[in-house]
Amino acid sequence: GAGVSQSPSNKVTEKGKDVELRCDPISGHTALYWYRQSLGQGLEFLIYFQGNSAPDKSGLPSDRFSAERTGGSVSTLTIQRTQQEDSAVYLCASSLDDPSTDTQYFGPGTRLTVL
Amino acid sequence: GESVGLHLPTLSVQEGDNSIINCAYSNSASDYFIWYKQESGKGPQFIIDIRSNMDKRQGQRVTVLLNKTVKHLSLQIAATQPGDSAVYFCAELSHGSGNTGKLIFGQGTTLQVKP
Image (cartoon, rainbow over all chains, first blue to last red; front, side, top):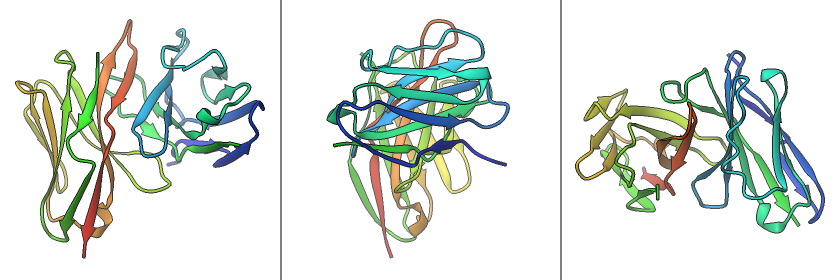
């Protein structure tokens, strides 16, 4: 079946501009996660959505970062006033339900470059 | 604080040999660990997981070993193939309030398979 999809695959923007990154989770998955991967590094947790519960935003690096998940499906990660240090690959993952029992499946990521 | 790390940044093996990738974790309360494989330009792909009530778990050509005494995790790949070349990450599930399930990733080990 279809996996997690993300768009765009690549995004180049100028410093100070806002960007929106989109994630389509696997159909039926109630949990959705955003991670950031800087060059040559591991993945850094950003935010986690579970059903209708309040999201866990503990990983967002600054108030320039925000995310929404509408209708319990598609999610958008927004970065306002982008900075060069925001350049990274942004990965989305989804899992069926319980993160302690259900595998997180990752999308291909969006490579963001801030000039 | 929590951290998950890998002992070696790069591992080079001959095709057909067995590979062992190591990982150390610091949170003794962690009870769920996952290995991911990431090929260039792609998102991480689930390989195998293990819970803290187990010492060993086997999959197809892969085995994960967990030593809770020394907080050490390893991934063994039997008869390594060129297609196994990738970056391998261990991840630890961090339990927050409620049912939060964010993964804490290590920095990754690059596996290079020589033909």
